Image (cartoon, rainbow, N blue to C red; front, top):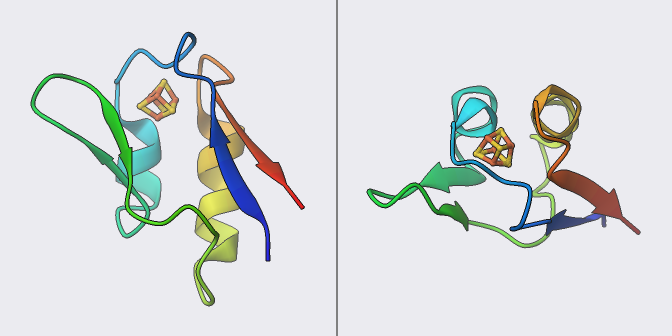
Length: 64
Ligand code: SF4
């Protein structure tokens, strides 16, 4: 199962990842990214991969 890694220095809290995969990514009221799951849950792998690719600041990556 792949692990989601956030580079907090790069994340600007725009929330594109949340828009693509809301079951995994949530931006709180202060613009901080909250991972609702550290591991990619079954059934949403495609959305999570899309969110990782769609992050404009390249703040997300997946690790084995
Ligand atoms: S899309 Fe990227 S920069 Fe925007 S909240 Fe998600 S991880 Fe942060």
